[in-house]
Amino acid sequence: MSDRSVIVCTLGRVPYEATWTLQQHIQDALIAAKRATPPRIPPNVLLLLEHPHTYTLGKSGDADHLLLSDEALAAHGATFHHIDRGGDITYHGPGQLVGYPLFDLDRFATDLGWYLRTLEEVIIRTCADYEVTGTRVEGRTGTWVGPDAQGPERKICAMGLRCSRWVTMHGFAFNVDPELDYFGHIVPCGIRDRGVTSLAQEQPRDVGVDAVAPMLLKHMATCFEADLLPLPPAESYTYLRDWLPADAEAPLDALEQATNTAPGQISA
Image (tube, rainbow, N blue to C red):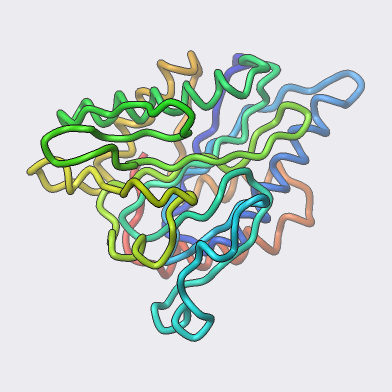
């Protein structure tokens, strides 16, 4: 395998908190590998998944940007997590394709700006496959659509990250066909003067995460000049169990149980 090999672990629809914990274990394992004597070079990892209804707030975000009380949050079947990425508040839910790249940027480019622009390019090219023009907005991370006849810029993909020893975690949340009403319960990314959109909203064809995922992975391989090996859920969990230390067992158990009981799977 090359230094830019990526194991794509497709996890299905899984709860946020255990996925966050799993990311921390993978990041720690990649850091430990590069600091070993001699250094080891395990493959990078991309977690590809959906979440149930979830709101996450970045470490520097404003809690007032969540517009629901605890009771209303529960009534909407959603959870809330204050987490360690950059950025403000965002929503995750069914119909949204979420990717968490656990990449050692020492093997790519030690430049967080380059990394975020490359993730944006992956989404822009995936949108183009559906004849949707994705764009960038100066000073605002993520991928946008517009301005056009339908209105001003609207975000189609949010991004946030945490990086330690040049190993990334967190990533992107691409709105394929989520329930956009859930964004109405927050100030998305802390931005009050712009809205959100989805691939389904912007073009007439039926779309779903199962169909979009392989196209996104194609562009991921091209833009990052990486060798991707997509694994289905069962093989993904086997790979992670074989590679990670024993203390990762609890989040893996929780995620695998959720994968086996949640509706639908993401096809890589």
